[in-house]
Image (tube, rainbow, N blue to C red; front, top):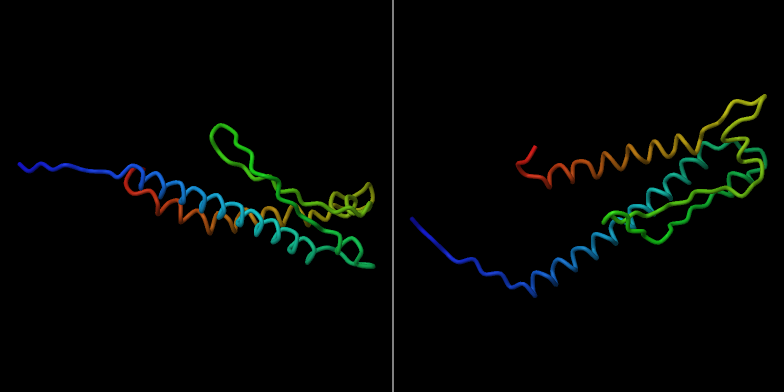
Length: 128
């Protein structure tokens, strides 16, 4: 039978884990910005054009991270300030909804799952 001692430099471990958390937070924020930019680009690409005013008006903003139950959440707002953009997206009594923004959000979700899903799965060794 063999025995051994395990020593852990706690200060060094704590500093390394703090750097990892900061880097992870930055990665999550960058990913949220990229996803929002993709949503805006995909929406604008599919948006119908007459004068181009409403297509050019798509914007996104990333709110500061909010902690809820120990998890950080980034809230992304995608908007279009042109008054008739809501009619193009959601339709009217006489016009079918375009659903361009909603479609772009679904596409972004699938892209995120394709990129981050394997990373999360590969990080878990064992426990199924």
